[in-house]
Amino acid sequence: MKQLTVLVAVVGALTGCGPVRSTANILDAEVQIQAARTAGAEKLAPYEWTAANLYIYKAREEVGYSDYQAGVDFAVKASKYANEAREKAMATAGAEPTSTDGRPNP
Image 1: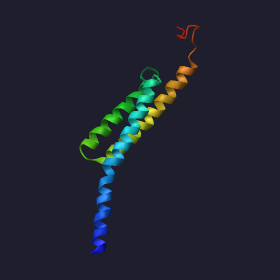
Image 2 (image 1 turned 180 degrees about the horizontal axis):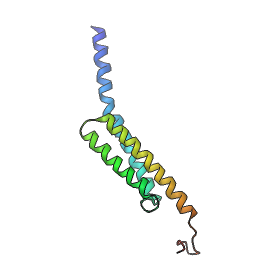
Image 3 (image 1 turned 90 degrees about the vertical axis):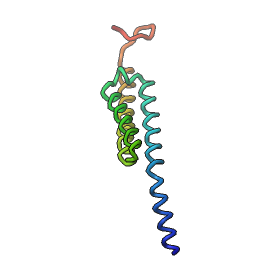
Image 4 (image 1 turned 60 degrees about the vertical axis):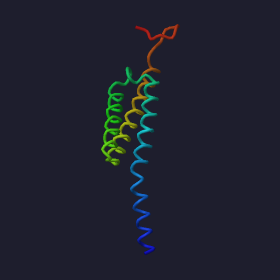
């Protein structure tokens, strides 16, 4: 009887991990996307920016269908692309020559 109680507790704990993990990964990806937006990735790294946004959209969709592992996978990809977009945008912005008033040269 004690083994059955332990088994039920373990199964219950594992069942509850899916929504928590997927939510945490989606929130992390959203933070990375916001950091990329702040770095100007919409214009400076459009491929990575678009990929990150499409993956986060798909992650939310899969979590909505209760497919938490797929949601985690897509959120991780969104986070990866958002981070790449931020890094690329920062590198591109740092490499652009600017005039004395801080605007990019034509």
